Amino acid sequence: MSTSSAAPEGGRPDGEHSGPLRAWLYEVAPDGTSHLMGPSTGRPTVTVEPNCTLRVSVEGGQNTPTMKFLKAPPAEGMSTDPVTVESDSRGFWKIRNSGRTNTLRVQQYGLSAGLLRPRTSMPMAGRDVAVWIPVVPRGTSTGKSESFRLLILAAPGAESQDNMGPTKFITAPRRYLSEPKQEALIAYFGDHLSWPPLPAPHVRQQAEVERIAELNGLHKAPDRERWARNRFDVLAGRDGLFRDADWYSPLGGPDRTLANYLAAFHRLVELRTFTLRRVCEWAARHDVRPYALIDRRLVPDS
Image (cartoon, rainbow, N blue to C red):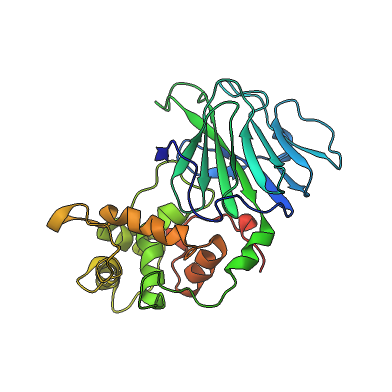
């Protein structure tokens, strides 16, 4: 998982204003996909009103107007009380690592995770945020030294701020993000747009994009191979998204690949070119849903 020591960028730097907050608790499987914890393992989802505190806890507790709990089953390596989410003095949501030893990762939708050390906190800097809670993997057959549970947070009221018409390109002169570019970004960067997030996302190569289309029976014109090549050129060709603007990442020299443009992709996310709801709409419209794994329960209705 890509991490940094700073808080995730993007959104409003002071945090999401404390409207109602929804929270879900997921278990991350060995293959990296996440599954909502069932009622038999605890309490997997809750809505938290302003001026109320959310605690993820092994012991759980009685929900009250001022305190809500997500009860998680105990796991080796996990604190009994790993995460607390509460409003600060200005009415913004903040995430606190309430454990004593484990460092958490906090990740805004579409971006890399930032580290949150024990007994420290950071503002919830976007509408959709994930908190990675480390645990010791079950058994030794996986060969992994670390596994995770995921706390997914959503502040639905913040989504209205993204309802500002068609997505605009982020450089001058102002341009629209065309439909082929929308489709290409999901096809090649879909791992980074999946939600819950994947622990090790990567930027796809053309052959992988073509193979996913074939495995899922996607009909692309004029054929899958030329469609995948064309969508690559839409992003990184001579007049592509990452080549026709002065902000694109120059890393990699003449042999650069799409992965060298990840910094430019993250800049698009930081400026809210992408939101979870918008990516779902684009994926359905362009028939590229298999490229971004998104649990529809986490997507706002409007």
